[in-house]
Length: 82
Image (tube, rainbow, N blue to C red; front, side, top):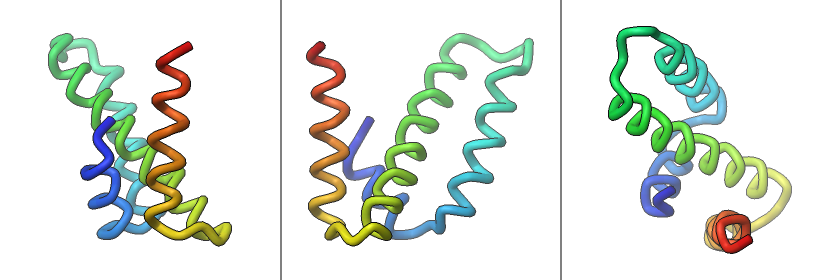
């Protein structure tokens, strides 16, 4: 997870575009011939896309962009610390 990447995705793509990309990446990960490295890269991209989708939701619920990004980062870091 990289907050600058999530910010960039949030600012430059719609939730619909992110959902479509997410579906493609998930399908890609199911192919038999891809390497573990490729799955890891796709997984990192999926994580960032899901983060951007969550930030979109928080902003549509009334949060400021900066607050939504910080809240998402804290949520993820909190789940890692457990």
